[in-house]
Image (cartoon, rainbow, N blue to C red):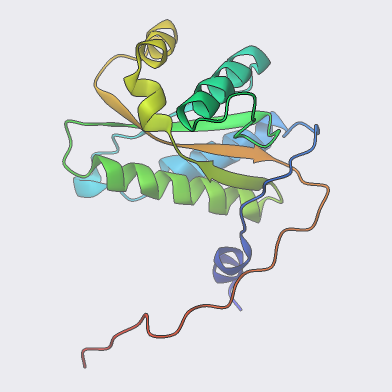
Amino acid sequence: MNDTIQTLKTRRSIRTFNDKPVDKALIEQIIDAGLWAASGIGKQVPIIVAVTDPELRDRLSAMNAKIMGKEGFDPFYGGRTVLIVLSDRSVPTYVYDGALVMGNLMNAAESLGVGSIWIHRAKEEFDSEEGKAILAKLGIEGDYEGIGHCVLGYSDKPAPAGAPRKDGRVFWAE
């Protein structure tokens, strides 16, 4: 089987990250793959914020947990690297474009032996005054919507097995 298709079939969400840091060179490769995602009319509007600073990572985790109503819980499952995908609301395809970036990030991570998971609630985080202040401090200007957090790391456990694919999801019009 083709390596790309194999990666697409074996990638799973990791929910038990250990403390081993992901090497910066691997993070850069994963980010580069995200930047190569398809985008509507080739506009390339999504941006990626690579968070490796423990203080900011923990602040984002706390914000995310509060939004989900589980204060004290770590929605990033211990992962120490968070790639935040934001997309420019002025472009009609911004959500789809951001979702494609997220998919590329997770599949690239899998291909490099790095675990990942998509964590939601980035929209709520960065629509808040606190989230907007974080972006401003980072020098990010514009009307961006949070699409998702791609949390990266390594698990001490094997990745979970994939569920069988459901029947009845393909329709041919020949």
